[in-house]
Image (cartoon, rainbow, N blue to C red; front, side, top):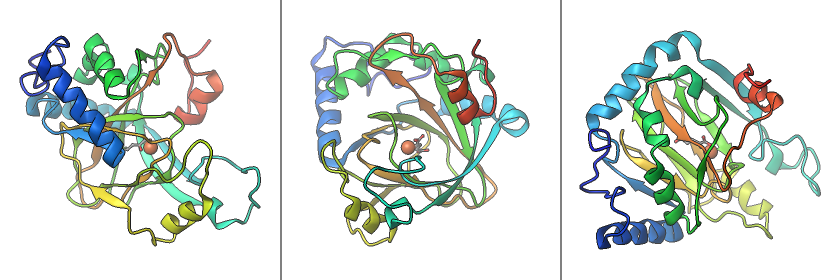
Length: 264
Ligand SMILES: O=C(O)CCC(=O)C(=O)O
Ligand SMILES: [Fe+2]
């Protein structure tokens, strides 16, 4: 893994060392304070460029263009809210997705299947273990956003989101987020509406650098990727982990996310 990852700075391969414990403690503190941590230079510059370059032809020719009008919950209705509640207002998202079965040989798949990666992520999240998905499509996705496109405001369905930016756009493509906007027992609709109106001073913005590992609590951190501007597409690898092994999507889910299914 040394050729792919900066294991001198981030010793994921040495879980029994004080340096590893210190790194995990730092990430946990960042998650608690900011709802997010990022590790610049995690994927080495050459591996980052290689991953983006390897994905580019398939991205141009066979990615799934996913355009949708959605609310922050990706749900048609929410109990207790009328359909015209501002919290349910629709925003537009467009992006282009390559699934794991379309990026064979890409370095990001080697990283995904390297057991210390999941073990490290679990440690930062205070979990006993995390497991790779079995699903041949969903395991790792590479998503591109092109000139004028954005991933709009949403909460994630999974508790944590783990990404590595592979290629930045000239401008735009920043991750905007508002940590701790809701919790399991408080949906905080007024707070959600305030963010959507652009009136929450606690919204923060981070311009990720290519190669940085980024982890955030997407389930209660409202977030979006701002509109990309310029000829270079923003490309990000998204890694899916679960607290149990062997998770697959249903055929319906695959079609919903990717426009095709490989499920039996
Ligand atoms: O592209 C990013 O940086 C964030 C991706 C994201 O929010 C998601 O996949 O749910
Ligand atoms: Fe998200």
